[in-house]
Length: 227
Ligand SMILES: *[C@@H]1O[C@H](CO)[C@@H](O)[C@H](O)[C@H]1NC(C)=O
Ligand SMILES: *[C@@H]1O[C@H](CO)[C@@H](O)[C@H](O)[C@H]1NC(C)=O
Image 1: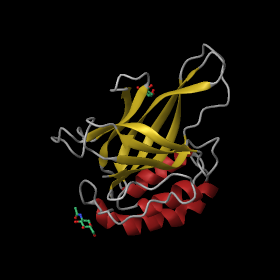
Image 2 (image 1 turned 120 degrees about the horizontal axis):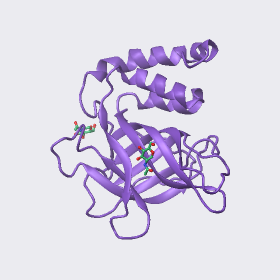
Image 3 (image 1 turned 90 degrees about the vertical axis):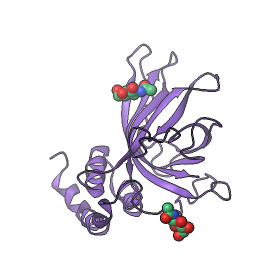
Image 4 (image 1 turned 135 degrees about the horizontal axis):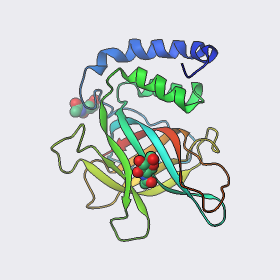
C-alpha cells in the first residue's frame, strides 16, 4: 500500500461517499450525467465565466504529467503535458472535495479518484500538445476524444490557446495554475471554452542545472468543457 493507514483512515468517509453516490451512474456510457446546469467552482480565483450561451457539456478528471525542460538560466520551462481524461460528470462534486480539501500526495489522489470513478472508469479522451496550428512559435493544448468516447466523430477534438492563467488558490508552488483555454477557430468542434481548475501537483522544482534532461511532474486537474 502506498499510503499510511492514518491517511487512509482520514479518507475513508470520502471513499464511501464516492461509492454510494456514484456507483449507480457508472454503468452509463460517455458523459454519464447531464452537467448543463453545473456551476463551475472558480470562486474568487480570478478566472472569468464562459461567454453567455455556453454551457458545460463535460467534466473530466485529467491525470498525467506536466513536462519541463531546463532553460539556460537554470529554471524549468513548460514543454507541454499529457493526461488521460476520465469522465467525472457524475462525481465532480466529490472530486472537488477529494482533490482540494483532502488529498495532498498525488499518488493517493490518483488511487482514490480512480476508485471513486469505478474499476473501469470511462476514458473520454486524451490531452496533449501539438505544434501551434496557426504557425506561431510554441505548442498548443489539445483535447481529443476521437479514439475513445467519440470514436467515429471526426470533429471530436479541439486545439486551444490560453486566454487566462491564474495561480492555484491552493498551494501554488505545488499545484499548477488554473486556466481558461479557448478554441482556435477551425481546429475542432469538441468545445468552445475549457477550464483547468482544482489542480493538484504538476509544478516543477524552483531551479535546475542547465543541460539536465527534461523532467515530468505528475498532476491531476478537473477540466470543464463548455460549448
Ligand atoms: C440536459 O439538461 C438540460 C436542462 O436540464 C436540457 O435542456 C438538455 O436537453 C439536457 N441534455 C441532454 C443531452 O439530455
Ligand atoms: C511528456 O512526458 C510524457 C511521459 O514521459 C511523454 O509521454 C510525452 O510525450 C511528453 N510530452 C511532451 C509534450 O513533452
